Length: 394
Image 1: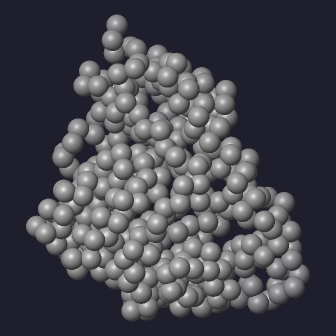
Image 2 (image 1 turned 90 degrees about the vertical axis):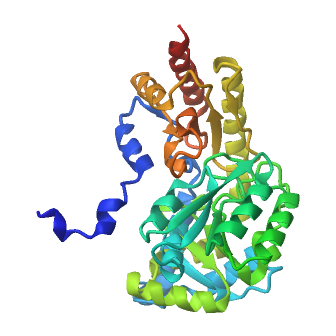
Image 3 (image 1 turned 135 degrees about the vertical axis):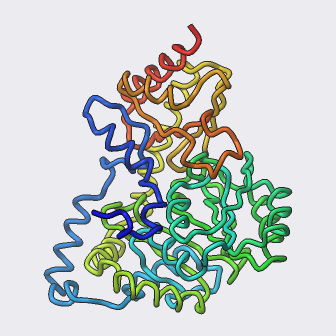
């Protein structure tokens, strides 16, 4: 087919780097630390089955029909009460989306014209980079540190570039695993409030805390100047594709218009199953089980890193979430390391997709997921990764 039939947009935006890596690691012998996958052993299959049967038997005709764009009102009320009880939020401030990934696309449609400035963390979530790229903004990046965003760089670049949007993952950041401290969040909010920038606080991992350290929410600190995103993918079931966007009513109205043009509404049947599950099951007990299991895996991966990975390689020790981040010394090229490790049947995500341009050397970083592996695989995979690293120093 002639190339000029396609839009410039579709030719400009690359395929998802991680999705392509996952295709290459589907062989059963591969130990994959690459995907951001919840562990399927902890999906509440029986409870979902019971909720599904109950919904179908009681209101089968209704739950299989079209529904409203905003989403099921009781589910939206549940989200408002559980996550935003101290923010003055109601169901009218919430739209159910196809995962928080769709929320990014809808927000971009609402706010972005070609050439608008969008601020991201450095490194930043590659799904946001890909989603926003569709709308041809100019990206501005700000480094993150052990306790959160680099406040000095942030203030300087907000004043210089005046970005429309600042996208961040403040809880158990993807890809590094770090969380913003409460002090960092407060200082960040003070800077944002002096600007016209809207902050997008994406929070898919917030429930996956290992130490139950309370974090003040950016929505609480910034009010209408913050758009908050959430997801049930990490605590319920990712296949349901249920997330949400929480924002000021004026923004919500525009998001609804964009969603009506996109897909009319998020899967209503899935919404009803989820809500029935939430009413009949103990979601907090389920989340606590996930937290315990993921912490065991994080602890064991760090233990194996200390045993098998050279001591000059830096890594994060996250307090929750699904990822840790490695920084390699200059004698190791991460793409070559990926090829060597893959031949040893272990996979990870090289750091390059998490960066815009060449502001830092992405070929010296990588991301590891610890949630979707059992302990024997973690040991064997980190051992193989250590052997691959050792091959650079013989």
